[in-house]
Image 1 (spheres, rainbow, N blue to C red):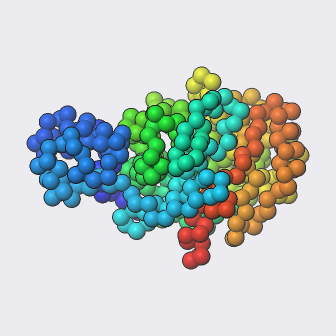
Image 2: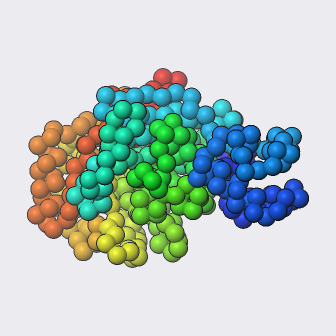
Image 3: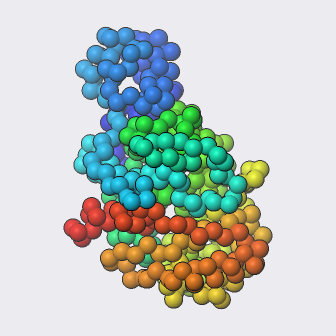
Length: 375
Ligand code: SF4
């Protein structure tokens, strides 16, 4: 049973909710817009900093214990490749990890979404585009067999404010401000976003309307919660969709991802085929390659058959190893051979460069150092 948590700060409230709040306090409704700007666009961290609000209103916020609610960066690990893994803490003592990748994750390379010649600089580094990988739950219940986060189980859902708050905390730490700076957001950190759908979608809307990140620069990854794929397709504002596939048949996928027993490949691929794509948009299938398990030439051919005709690309990720995980990383040659077979079958396939492996920030490695020792 997941314990739901009520928001403790203003972060996570919509413009409508903020407007109601200021009106209840006897303030004119435009103060709601001022609060909205202060929270999401300026990302201020205390009510005292909101110079557009009258002093007595700021004081009354303090008296009513209304904090802005930006979460705290508890720890920061910086990789030799520029990736930064943040441990972000919430008032109830729970924490999640959020990853900053100053040159994106390269998973999108070659799909036409690169930033051209734009070059930004933060903390003495230059980067073309940055990606923030955001968590949606504390831990995860989905139990993919190759994932370190799965070893934690799930503790609770994050609120919309806690999801947006990770982005705000990282942007402030990096002194970066969208839309001026090009930032992508991927919901691929700890947790299954579609098992926390309402809060996740509210966070998406706040990131678009408030923080200023276009929906086209966001991607959500699901392990295959099929009904929510249909729900996402019906949303007026939504991120791009990635599906964590990892096997081309039910027997193999069921052994790697227990969720496949609830929604099998037929249901999953049908939902993928029915997903309404925008102009030039493609679905992404993510495929973690496990040595000797799902990386054979035959498996690559089967995968090509399975997704034939879907407007999609495949991101291949050689397993990021870790203690407690029973699989090994395949040799580079097996990875490139798998890619070659997909491309020959007409499926665009890309190999993702692992980011931040030395600080355990790569895919499936989150929470490794913080809590694994306690397991
Ligand atoms: S891969 Fe994603 S969905 Fe699967 S257990 Fe890990 S965090 Fe959860």
